[in-house]
Length: 184
Image 1 (cartoon, rainbow, N blue to C red):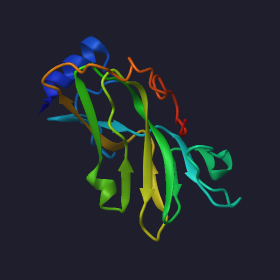
Image 2: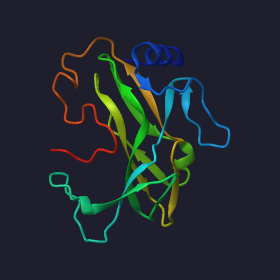
Image 3: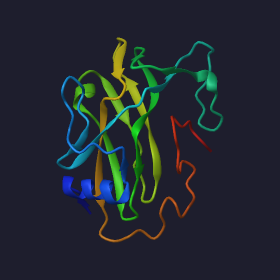
C-alpha cells in the first residue's frame, strides 16, 4: 500500500470528481493553507458548526444522541469553549475510489494551539462531506476559521481492490451532506 502523490490526486479530482471543489495549489495568503500538497490534500472547514454544551445536563450517548447536547452556529469564526468539542464538515465533497483508503490528520497550525482534529478513515467507495471532530484541549476558548484549512487527507492505494467496499455494505454515512450526527 503506497501513499499517492499530487499528480495522482489532481488526476483523480479532475477526471473522477474525487474532490469537489478541488483547489489546484495550496492557498496561503493570509489564511490557514488549503489545497493540493505534495502527498495530500488540505481540506477547508465549512461555516457550519455544532458546539457541544452542557447547559441542559445532556448525556452524550452514541445510541440515543440528544440534540440538546450542542448548539448550532453558522459563522465565519467559531469559538470552541475551553476543554470542549465541536463538529463541523469539510467544504469539499469526497468520492473515494474502490482501491483507496483515506486517512486524515489535523494541521500543525491548529495542533500547536491545542486543537485536535479527529476523523475516522474514509473507506473505499465512500462519498460525502466529511464530518470533522474538533477538540479544544486547552483551558482557553479557541478560534476555528471557516473556509480555511483544518486538516490534511492522505490517500493510500491498496495493492489490490477490496472485496467489500463501503458502498457494497450500504454504509450508514454514505452520501452525507452537512454536519452528520452519530447514527446507529
